[in-house]
Picture 1 (cartoon, rainbow, N blue to C red):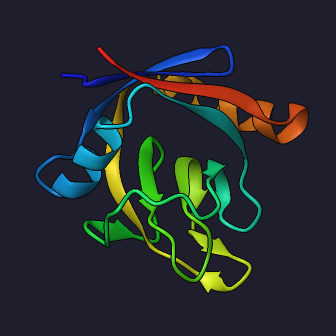
Picture 2: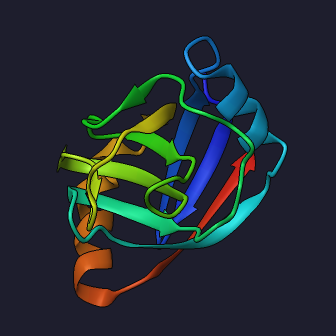
Length: 137
């Protein structure tokens, strides 16, 4: 079952909220739908794309936090020693910033469109920022 449609660049994905593991993060993100931004390729973390959000606050703390999201997992770093961000892993990721390793809240998992993850990552790497839109289904 999918809760969201995600349109990133020319690709469409579906995702489910991880409500049991990260209820506050899911609630905070759902309240901001539709969520529109741009993704760029990560700098330190490996194979992922991220949405840098500066000092934007979702009003959540750590829950279901990981430094190693699997391909198709989306994490929210609520801010602290680095800026707030959302990261989508498309391959191997060790979540980090210029200050070192971080952990983010795994709150979404892709349920459809995974076959396009690597293509999205390569597109962001070689062509630059891509539009992204999260919307309820």
